[in-house]
Length: 538
Image (cartoon, rainbow, N blue to C red; front, side, top):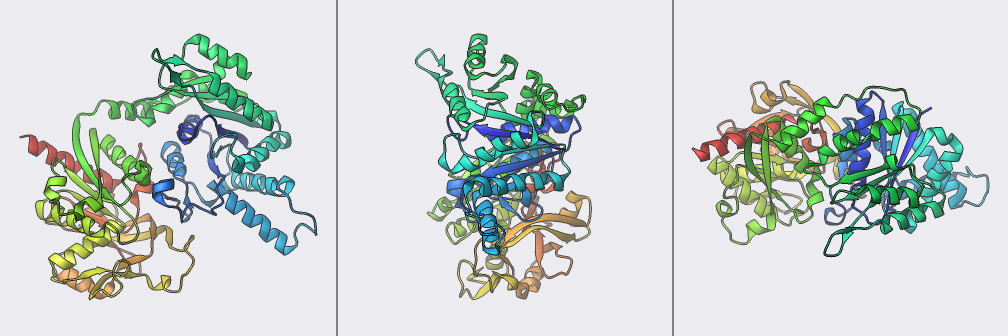
């Protein structure tokens, strides 16, 4: 039987519940256990695919094509596991299943209610995922904050699971905030106390408190929290703000959280092998080189909109022993008459990020043109590849007015067009080309050199592709199509061999990057950026 750890949050949202969940999973993975992470999201959307990045941050895509909350990206990066559709359970998914069951007559004419029907479905989905993953431990994070109306069915379900599975197989971890107030920075425990009281009203008594704080918590504060919240002092875990999020598992391990959890759940005693993780944290904190990379996107005002990209750049920095400063640039700013050279001044590399719609498109094209003409290392992702093809078509192939059908349906040269299989699609949710697809790389290309193989798989999320009617024109003018689908139907990767680094992919490689296994394309970009920075210093 799998063991279950349920992670809840209190006081305020966005206090790092996802990082706490991922870090705890890292500790268990280091001890040799198979861990299956799950995110229980209270929103009524069936998945995150139709959500606005400004409101919700990025949509993380799994190998099997699920469009999920960005926390699943943290789980994958920290735990070095692949999540799946079963890793994301939303209110929308749960209620859809319940309503479909009711329509089939599965409830035999009974009145369908939140308890037991909705809570039973939540429990079923959680336990089904545990079986599918053959997990030793399931770590399930409940989205939102204790006290939110929409999260009550999930909290009730995890309360019931202790009754169903037993104390020895279930554990509650509550992440809370311990703020400082006043001119002397007095540490306050009352918000944590009230948060735990609210949790207890629901029938859940936490086994561990992870206390987020910007300052060190004095011993008397820890003892006070222990006394008022009914949690042993050793289970009140101080989680101070650290220099890098990848340091959090080290902090937890040094605090003894890994051993505490293993003992509490009756797991076999295994030594924790955290040496390699400590080394990568040391590399982040003590880099040898440095560079600056600009990320041009449509949603840069929300730092979470491109979370996987920023983390993949950090991972590539680890591989190159470099500190990488990211300069976020809203693509609209490149459409207001400002010179790209001015905006990109001091940058050693450029990433043109994914996105949808026509806003900011011309700004991305201008940034790519500057990178191509000036030799600035460039990496385009999804829409970034499409904009690179448009820029090259206009300014090298002489196809004036070249564009994407998404932006200009009547463009004279639709070098980017809707995938044929997408033409009859009307629903927006889960209807794109999603998930992992294979790609063949051209021998001798930069992409093949970086990957070290000629056959790869990458995750996708798009409706538009390079129009094959213009392939030969692009090739005639020197653009290299370095990656194609196995049936040769889809352009997956392009590059310019005469450029220091000019690579773009239709895929989303950022989703597969890990701190202990940086993605080769990002690693190559940062390597080129570091070289450019070093040359500029001479």
